[in-house]
Amino acid sequence: MTRILDGKAVAREMRQETAAAVAELVAGGGRPPGLQAVLVGENPASQLYVRSKNRAAKKAGFASRTRVLDISTRRDELLAVIDELNADDSVDGILVQLPLPAQIDADEVLERIDPAKDVDGFHPINVGRLWLDQPAPAPATAAGIVELLRRAEIQMAGRNAVIVGRSAIVGKPLAGLLMRENCTVTVCHSRTRDLPAVCRGAEILVAAIGRAAFIGPEHVGEGAVVVDVGINRVSDADEVERLFPGDAARRESFAKRGSVVVGDVDYTRVFERASAITPVPGGVGPLTIAQLLANTLATSRARQGLGD
Ligand code: GUN
Image: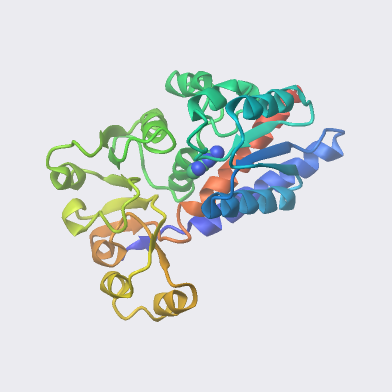
């Protein structure tokens, strides 16, 4: 029997724990954690992410705000906003939604954020701390995946983990975090030779490449735990039918929206080979927001002089 790893349920549990901790913090005379999102432009996916983050933050008792800036915002204008938020004591977490418009260098902006408020864990100082196993906010998707595996009681120590994708947001930080859990970690990318063979050696396989249904049964060893980070939109009806034959719910969703969300894993064909698998949607996605809130609670507590 393949276990479906219910990220939504784990995320709900994490958010409830965070909400309880916020209530305790406030009851003890503390300040509710302040999360400030910065959104530049009108990318619909980014708008959706930021709205979801805001809603979840408010529900957990945070003071949550979003600064929306025009798509034509200049580099120095955005840096000035970051400086202002760095100086604002009520802000415990600054989240600059990526991607940024082409005229702005994202690295420069991320480096400007006070590392103590860097709830995305993207600042070079916090990236360094992650690799040194020092306390620091870790990128939320990567940390959320480790939290899911831990809560699902999936053994990590001593196991071979293969991560497909070397992004700074997911693949790289996850490699560091899984190493910390005593996994033997391999990171694959577009130049990896014989990717299916490397992937078949995984006891924990993580797909984070951003290509719909790219990981097929030929990539999955019998009994592997499969974690699917992908969020891809497929708007071709035949492709949806090929990926999910006879799936009434997906057909209905396609009819309504003209597309369906598909992970990086060919779920239907991989399912039987896996011992456990995260679905898309409802797997890794919800964990990112839950972990972001946990990160913000942690920076807020630290900034209010409270320990872990
Ligand atoms: N864009 C895609 N994922 C992320 C994320 O985790 N944080 C931010 N700030 N932007 C993103």
